[in-house]
Amino acid sequence: MGMTGRFGAPGILIGAALISLAAFAACSKLPAGCSKAAEDQGTASALTPEERSREAERLFGEANLSLKDKRLDEAIEMLEKGIEIEPSAAAYNTLGMARKYKFIETGDASWRDREIEAYKKGIEIDSGHLTTILNLGTAYFFLDRKDEALPLLRKVLQLLPNHPNRDHIEKMIAKCREG
Image 1 (cartoon, one colour):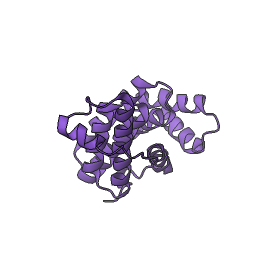
Image 2 (image 1 turned 90 degrees about the horizontal axis):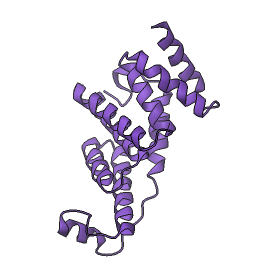
Image 3 (image 1 turned 135 degrees about the horizontal axis):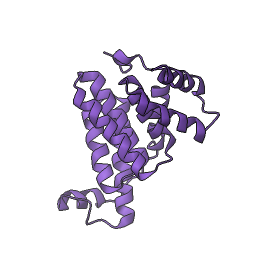
Image 4 (image 1 turned 180 degrees about the vertical axis):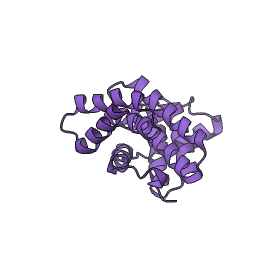
């Protein structure tokens, strides 16, 4: 089954995924030996804060490439490692998207639960991270948890009244109100 899967999600999800992936598109290379030093220690904790940040960027960049190539397990692993080093709303959002695609690929509902967990953690870090709010609201919408979806979808339009997918979001809001 393709990435749009059985939910037939509107362009919102794909657009949100592309926004998230673009956030990680810039990937810095570590100075020689940094990645090896982290490997030798079994953790990135031996690195300086600057090196840790670059290592996280490297991992997020690898995850981005893996997602583009639909290597979901690899992408999830890289995102989880990057988040251990440098958690952010954007990283958790991308992890949520990767887990959503894993659910679509496998049909295993536990991936859907993990998707939602990632979005929630992202929002804990940054309660105004628009893409994560939209993705959590959309996930709830497609799970028929419309009472949970409605305030999130409204918040998206409150934060960005001219959202490029405003029409789709308004349609979801209307369906949430219908019950």
